[in-house]
Each structure stands twice: as structure tokens, then as C-alpha cells.
Length: 241
Image (cartoon, rainbow, N blue to C red; front, side, top):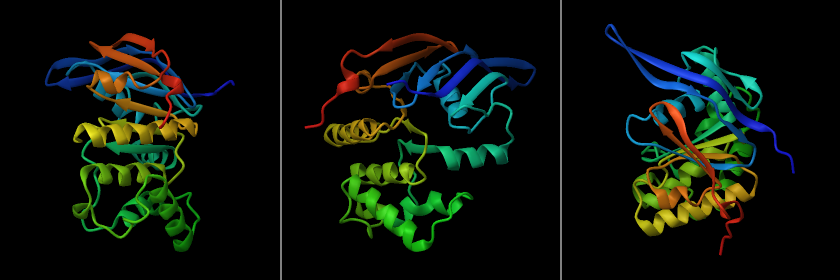
């Protein structure tokens, strides 16, 4: 099956101005990620991987080069335009979950729909969709619970449901297992594999090699450049027990 490119970058560069000194964070990164791929991005501190993820997540713009997201060049968009792209096309999963503490799981999941200007669903439809996603991630009986009433693994499941609510073309996961014990981390990875089997495109930053090895492909960044770009054996056909 031929998949279309979701991410295509050409010679991405990012330079930060520190007083009179220019500090290059990205030195010309060209990558291509197709629809339905599950990719890990790795790299030591200061390698440029966080800068790359910020650009892929439309949280920042490159100094030079091009970034095509879902066949649209988003490199030169302003902050308002980037915000629209984020809400319409991207789903985010964070290491610290980033849930609003006084909202229920259901309300946290619904939040991105409320900010999506292309969303024409009424309150009942949004409720129903959020409930369905919470059921998919195994929290159908926790929809009225606030984050403080949920374990770390459960909070991350809420965050995953929230990331999917606007049907994004790309899910960006930043150290999604970083705050979890090994059992919860394994459960979150199983959930990500299930989403991947549903043809979701997932790009995940991780420091953990054993987590990265579960993806289809690893892209390693070093000194602002792609150091390694390798396929992961049988990872693409990972089975859920």
C-alpha cells in the first residue's frame, strides 16, 4: 500500500541569537515520514531534537528550509496560522500529561474541540465523541474523574484520548512514558501500537532505547543533523496480546 507523506522537511535550519553570537540548533535536517508510520526521534541533550519537535509541532518556525505537513508548506506561517494548523492537524501527548486539574477526564478530552474553529459539532456530539475515545483508551468508567483521582498511567490515557479528539493527521508524543513506572509505560506503548494499527501516524521523542526499539523506525539527531535513520526489524508488525 502506498502512503502519502505526512512530514517532509528540506534542509531545515534553526539559528538562535544569543547576544551577538549565533547558535545553530538545526544545521540542515531533511526527513520524510509517511502516513501510518510510527517513528522515534532520539538524540543527546543539545542535539537539536527538541527544536526539531517544536518545528514539527508547529510551535516554532525554521530560520531556513521547508516543512511540509500533510502536503502544506507551513514553514512561513505566522503564529496565528500555526495555532490553527496545530488544532486542526496535530495531536500532542506530553510527558507531564498537561491536563487541567479542575476538569474531568471528559472535559479535558473535549477541550481541543472547543478551540477548533473548523469544528461544527454540538455539545452532545462532542460529549459522545469524547466518551467513545475514553472507552477506546480503557477509561470508559472514569469519565467524571479529575486528574488527581487518576493514576499517572490513567492520566496519560486521558491525554492520548485528548490528542485524538480532532482526528489529527499526526500524533506527536514527547517522552510519553517518561513519568511512568515500567508497567504503566508498557500499557501506554501497547495503546500507541493499537493506534498505529489503526493507521495513525505517530512521531515520538524518547531517551529510552527499549521504547524506541518498539517503533518502526528510529531517527537519531546529533549536532543539529540526522545522524542515524534506521528501520526497526519487525516493529511494524508488533502484536498486541
